Length: 181
Image (cartoon, rainbow, N blue to C red; front, side, top):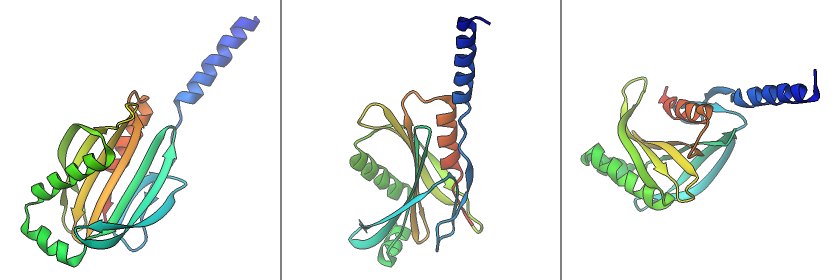
């Protein structure tokens, strides 16, 4: 073979190998929750104090990344007093408010949104899926938010505006995998 043929063959094989990047998704269940999600490894866990309404809560974030995609599962307990108020408010209104807060905190622009359901063993919970274009102009975020009984759950994947087929496929697979056991 000539050097050019060998170079072209090597380049073709390298390109094919790069196209088949595949994260190893496996079931992940954060401690002391009923949340189950398919997530790549390794997973980093961080906590921080946050506020829901006027109550202080501990927010948990579980993060992983692979091939230019960031995967994040956030959850926090909803304080009892707020749970009572949320029962009296329409879920749609609560989700609208959560989307407004999400847009304000991320600085993103809503591209799409739709209603979704969080499957559970006893019952499902209404939620919202939102696709945002982030302010850097190079990233999109696909996020689902759910008030689920005594928990508030966010599951998000951030990926490039012009993703490879696999990047968008695995981002969607991740956000769609969340359920309650």
